[in-house]
Image (cartoon, rainbow over all chains, first blue to last red; front, side, top):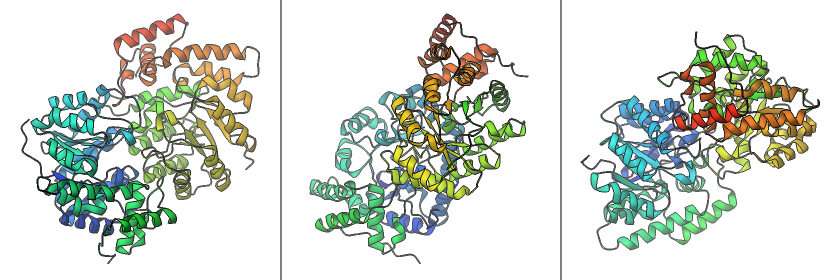
Length: 310
Length: 310
């Protein structure tokens, strides 16, 4: 493979999914938030872990993606999560994303069974790619062992690249281990395989090592700064910019991240409906929210101020 | 709650799901296998872990359940797995099972997010029960931390029983820890809460302690013996019968269980199509199958001889 760089390089966000009072996804809030992210040059990795993507049904995900595309947001900046425990679900979502023109899909391995073999995981990815059978498909592998428990090894990547060159396009490494991210870049980066760090913590390290960028939850609430740090990584002050990103992330990471980011958006927009999460998650408790606010104020964090609901 | 004993007590099997060459579920084989289990007095806990239940889409599970009910198999002996990561999926499957007349459903907690709170899990189960809103619903909680990683604590059971007496009807404990099964029986058994051991390993212990029976993978391949051991647990020879069950289970448990059980059925029926599994699982390797056959022969195991395909 000698692929040209994709339109996805840089910074993407696993877009938070807002919910209505009946816990159905709130399309208007979702669309507004996605528009704001795009305006900050943050790509849309919708239906990721921090999107509560696995708490959404296949039909709900299809519908939300349609909302974005029909509103004219650029599919060239979309990498929806399409992995699933059940093959038919992964196939349906992946096909839908490709037909919508998405530049890539972010694919979790099936994650219910633990201790499965690389052979079984190879067959899982292969089954989806073979079934979708579309030359436009670009698969980004999603390695997040702390949550999925099922990870993606280097030998598995090598085997997939050998069988599906050009289709298997990159990886999001949310292992939290820089040594792994580095090893993947060193092994496969030169052939155009795009390696995204799983958070901005390793953004500068990833770009310096030849990686493609990061896909980070906190890009939901600190997108402009993360995107600027990525765009200007060769310029003076890069380490200071990275340190500033780290301070913001630390404040969110001290709490349940998804609920904390939603609370920050609720505060910034004045729209308390943003606080809702789907079970099994729970919204931030009052005390925790107060602590988050204090921490954010202490570092001079400016909250996102998306327009309130129409 | 002072519920009368359910029609599910005794032995149930997480029914293996056979697949066609294109990896779609094989309804004819599934129906034949279910008929054979019912004939052995083994109940149908379809769509469990050993059914590859989480590798099936919601639509596939609905269809397979319909096949059984339309063929006249007794819903009074059915406890389909209906838990899912996404609430809408769990609600749809649970509602479908209740409308089909199933005596109960076996409900996994949402299992993607790890380290979630009991509050979040309570809300998950409550959301399904409230949405289905059918007085016929009987929920059996599915505690299988070695696989799901997300477990069901005693305080959570207590809270659910307090809020949904009569609806929250029991549990399958696949923790593999007898101390936990015993604690659940002691805490809630007297009020009619039906505790099923997650395998026949603890069948006798569970029945002696006042539990309801077991839901065991190996009932797919040793159903008659397990059902007999359950029915005659107060009669002389119970410990010997339990020991015989343990020997058979050990032979299967030494290998990847699902693939091993499917291989045994393939050998017994002469229908090699039974060997198929869905990714990420893989079928038993030739060497492992030979080892299984040798182990089974050594203990005088008689293979299931379901009729071959029509």
